[in-house]
Image 1 (tube, rainbow, N blue to C red):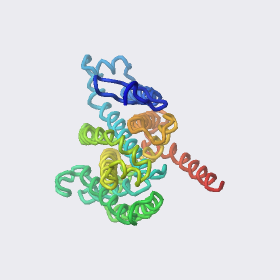
Image 2 (cartoon, one colour; image 1 turned 90 degrees about the horizontal axis):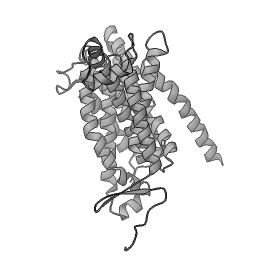
Image 3 (spheres, one colour; image 1 turned 90 degrees about the vertical axis):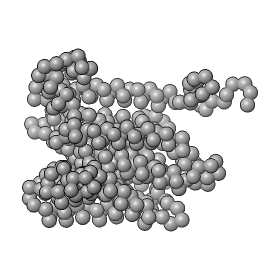
Image 4 (cartoon, helix red, strand yellow; image 1 turned 120 degrees about the vertical axis):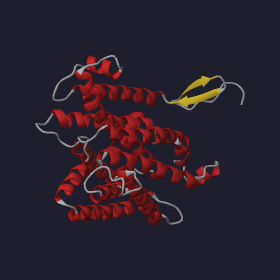
Length: 358
């Protein structure tokens, strides 16, 4: 085609020589604002604690320009917790956006379709069988809780996908099967807790709520590695996800290998969810809420992946700040996110019922 390229409404072009990139200014600016919010919350999360540290001191320490007792508190005691919270929110937000786009349903999240429950069963089994420690090297392939959670999530996803397959996968069938599988897996988790010693069951129960209180650098590195590998791959699937929104026949007609693409999306969502659950437990409703918030902010037909991830990071960081500063005792971050997310789920179900009755 000669002349100026045809540009979709609401998009702008960025060109690097012969390479052109289309992007939505509204998505870009909300993503940039979310990134700025995450950075502010990171600084505040490190600054606030039993001893207040000035934000300027925090920034200098993070840049390696500060030494002394404050620098030790920042880098050794507080930064691992804050980074874990940010990475947990990032991975859960992107995982939720992937599954909601894949199922074309706002209820199609890792929490609902059984992935989170599968990861929880694997991790609790590792804790219980490992004697209540987080170093269950002799239990699961020398990998401990991260490997156990990943195996549990993969098995749960395979069962849900297999039971939901009837010449294809319908979103409501997948969700209904996922609810049933989640209930079964939650029963298995309860059985493991009942059979465990009281001290082990207490530790596992606290972890199941979703907490950042026991995080350290050993929690950060596995999650950071998974995010560094899986998040770019997930972002690279964005174009294929958009094509998949047009329906299986259209997607196949333009050359998309639909089933292979779906398996890749599920695998990415499973790995991202399992990494988050292994690090901080099942932090509820993050994967459900933030993709829908990103969808409404961006005004797109599906949740933008990076925006959803950054909103997830901001939500977990804000919930952690609230849990540490608004109560006389520390409240697990999973309780705060559940209190925020549960009313939204009820509102969404009521709204959907009204739309169906019209």
